[in-house]
Length: 85
Figure 1 (cartoon, rainbow, N blue to C red):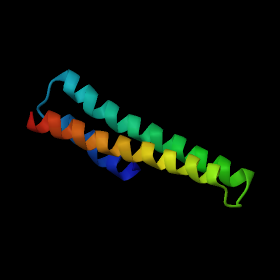
Figure 2 (figure 1 turned 90 degrees about the vertical axis):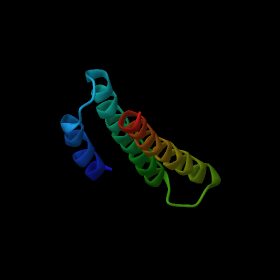
Figure 3 (figure 1 turned 90 degrees about the horizontal axis):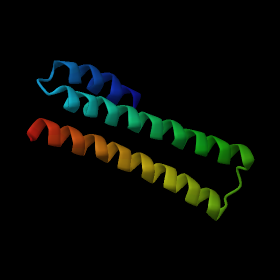
């Protein structure tokens, strides 16, 4: 995730897009990074509470992973719309 941001954010400065589009490209990358940090925090907290398998723990971790997948999908979608639109 960090590597993706290290590549995409500097790349956005070399694209010929409006300021609003540039801000959107950077914002969506930073949002995905925030979601990744929150997902890591949830996983660490659950692992800290107990390493035993529990359905609620699994659900929480799965929801965090789903949020991260949606954030990464949003990066692809926004970048595609800006670059192709």
